[in-house]
Length: 164
Image (tube, rainbow, N blue to C red; front, side, top):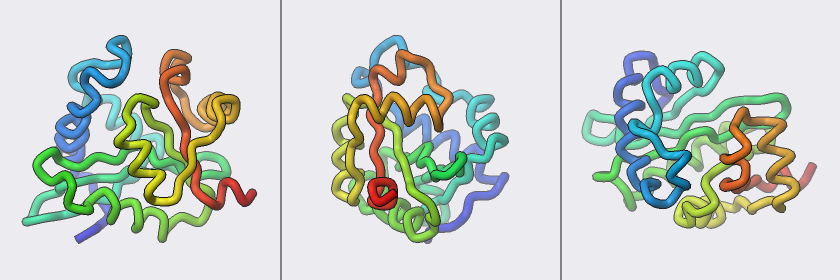
């Protein structure tokens, strides 16, 4: 079942993000990795800034989450994570499909360039990687990330983005 997450889901969201983010260990630059990958304070700040989560519930617990944030004229997919024990079961695809069904504006995703599985996932779902020049412009316009993260990231956009 896919549902909107509520305040009571905070700890589960935190656990899912940090469990699933272990896949990035050794993939993203070591200077961008920290433990936990997303501290509670950072997650709270992001939610306060407007990141809202959908959750995929399986067996009475959240198995995956996808966070979005409306910024200016786009929707950003800010966080997409599935518990390690629940991967490869279509949960991420189901969350993305629901997110896209709800989207009324172009959708952008920023992820680590070396996380090829994540890039391929979004490409399989119709997203396309933007050019390096466009990536830098978009990351500076819609995200608040350090230069080092801009250097090591890619941005993918949906069909609506390319149609505008």
